[in-house]
Image (cartoon, rainbow, N blue to C red; front, side, top):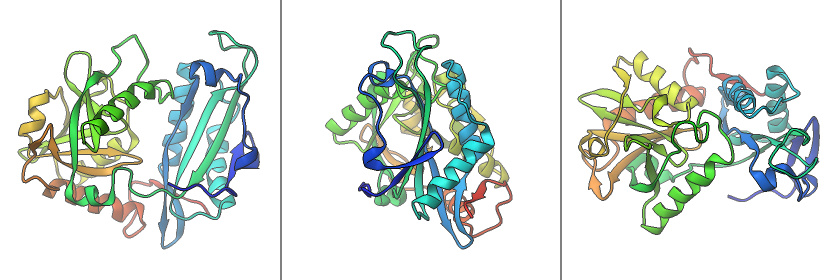
Length: 307
């Protein structure tokens, strides 16, 4: 992706040009990974730019910060408005929004309490995360040798920057083996999620997804797909998923803000179903995009218009 050098970054209530949006090399976040963040999509609709489930995303940012005892000095409403302001300031339509809250420079040491809590928001144009072709034909995925953190190690319900060091290892490994992305298992060997996506399988017309006890992030797109699927009449449940159930599933697909709904055509070089996007993923994709692109009524109330 290419960044416009003139893009404006919201930093604690002020807009700064990208070249001036800097933090100290001694900031706590640089040395200890003390940051929580969000990824949010804004869609270009007939009624103007609309941010998808921005309140839920910003509430999750607040919740993630709370887990790490980082008190964000802004209300939920103020954070939502800051996201809208950032899209407007950069004259964007369809885009990706990245809010981040981090500990800046106060002093060095593991204890972070004397370091200020700072917040920034960026926005830029970003297309399909895994690839346009994969959105239709399906991605080629491998099971990673790297596991998700065990309970009482890192809190996976916090969308924290430090957690993604684990994801990086899985993603790098997938690329080295020629896969588009990785699927990670939890400490017990059950399927958890991708390096940056939640996961669903389809068995006999039912949708099954790992539960929060499987070391997954509580995904907002995951929740949206569960609601859409139930509205369409599908049975949806959370369950432990063994590795081999992936191979035998009728369909497998990722969900996430960046990935949206990305079907999986193969896992560990084993063809899934017909080896391409299945009918359930197709129906969910079409319904999801019709909603977020403003083509049908937003009956779930998920869109917040920028203007």
